[in-house]
Every structure is written in C-alpha cells, then in structure tokens.
Image 1 (tube, rainbow, N blue to C red):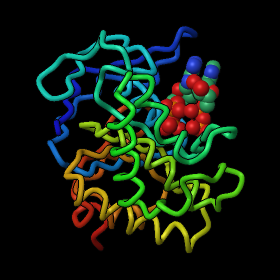
Image 2: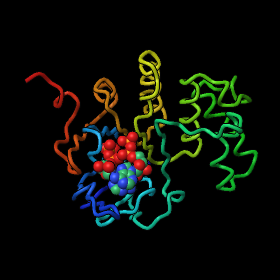
Image 3: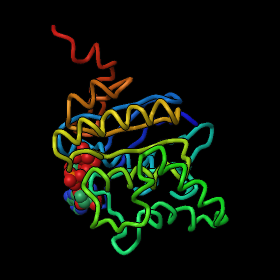
Image 4: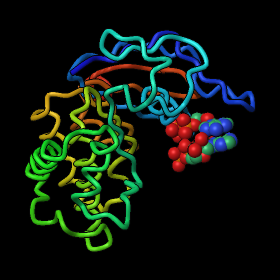
Length: 226
Ligand code: ADP
Ligand code: ADP
C-alpha cells in the first residue's frame, strides 16, 4: 500500500503539445481519488505517466517513498484497468488472470492460489474455464479487475472502467468497486465522466482543465448546492 506524489509533473508530447502542465498533488495511502474534467484535459496522460506507459517530460513522481520516473511499468507495483478491458480472447478467464503473474515468474502453485482468491472476491469462481466471448460485459469487466488484483498492487489506476457498461450494470459494478476498495485497503486513482461515480466512490475529486488542476475537493464540498 502506498501513496503517490506528483511534483511539478509536465508532459509535452513529441509534436510539442503540452498535455499536462505543472501538476502537483499528494495522493494519500488508501485514498480513492477521482479525476474529472472535459475530454482532452490530460486525465489519461496523467494516469499513463503514473503507470509508466508515458514518459514524464519533467517533474518528480513517487510511489510510496520511491522516485519511479525511470522505473519500468512492471516494476512499479501498479495495476491498471481500462474501459476497453482488452482481455486476451484466446485465453480462458483463469489464463487471463494468471498471465501477469506468469510474466513475473511466480511459481505455479502460488499463481493458482492467487487467481482463485481473486476469483472468489469477484464472484468469478464458476467462470474460470470460459473464454471472454462467452461472458457478459459485466463479467468481462470483473475479469479485467481480477487480472489487476491478482498482482496485489500498491496502487490501482482505473480509466473510465465502467463507461462501456449499461446503467444497471454500472450501478452494480460501482458497488463492487467500492467494496473492493474497502476490502483491499488500496489506493485507487479513477478517471470518470460520471458524477454519480465521482460522488459515491471518491474520497477526493481532482477537477482538471487544459492540462492543469482547477480544483481539489471532497465530493461533499464540490457538489454541494451553492
Ligand atoms: P480517449 O479520449 O478516447 O481516451 P485519447 O485522447 O486518450 O482517447 O487517445 C487515444 C490514443 O490516441 C492514445 O494512444 C493517444 O496517445 C493517441 N492520441 C490522442 N491524441 C493524439 C494526438 N493529437 N496525436 C497523436 N496521438 C494522439
Ligand atoms: P483526457 O484523458 O482528459 O481525455 P488525454 O490525456 O487523453 O485527455 O489527452 C490530453 C491531450 O493530449 C489531448 O488534447 C490529446 O489529444 C493530446 N494527446 C494525447 N496523446 C497524444 C500524443 N501521443 N501526441 C500528441 N498529443 C496527444
């Protein structure tokens, strides 16, 4: 478990576009932090820099006590869940969840234990032998979450994880994610366009606009009637 510290983080893309400008934020251990803001304001770029999928142009990024600017994604103790959960179609649910652990050369019996534990938490135990195409949207999204939690990361990054689901499923998954956060006692950084998600899940909400932080507040303060 760990907090995340962003100090003077900037991202300029190779074409010269400044997507993130002097971003400063201390994300506390076990916090559920929400990013909101218009499309193109730099939310995904910030998440991808934290994950190590996008190079940081300048500034200092810490996960826990470690400066991770030059640390490879797989060594950052972070798991990311995207909106287009991108499961491997030819692998079963079990294999999808085990894949990251295999890459890390975790022993087989340990992988088995970790996958089964995650499957229990996410109610996937009956589905372990299925291929993704034989799953509903909500089940697929749970597998994507499962793939993230088996690695027992310090920090979860979620980029609009529910935006491809219908309203009913979104409501159910929102509750699942909230339970997951409490149960795993982990730090979550979560991008959404959905005000209900932001209000019910977030401990704090960061409002971004044009590459900068416009406001940081609790959901109560941010959305209270004037
Ligand atoms: P979305 O708003 O759906 O999240 P993004 O804006 O993140 O989509 O873009 C999707 C992909 O396209 C990403 O890999 C991103 O790096 C790339 N991309 C987005 N805008 C540009 C751009 N102006 N030039 C080059 N690549 C871009
Ligand atoms: P958000 O997630 O808030 O929708 P992004 O972080 O995806 O925003 O993108 C921020 C800005 O950076 C957008 O204007 C986008 O077009 C631009 N962008 C994203 N990826 C690239 C890229 N690879 N090259 C150039 N510009 C990019």
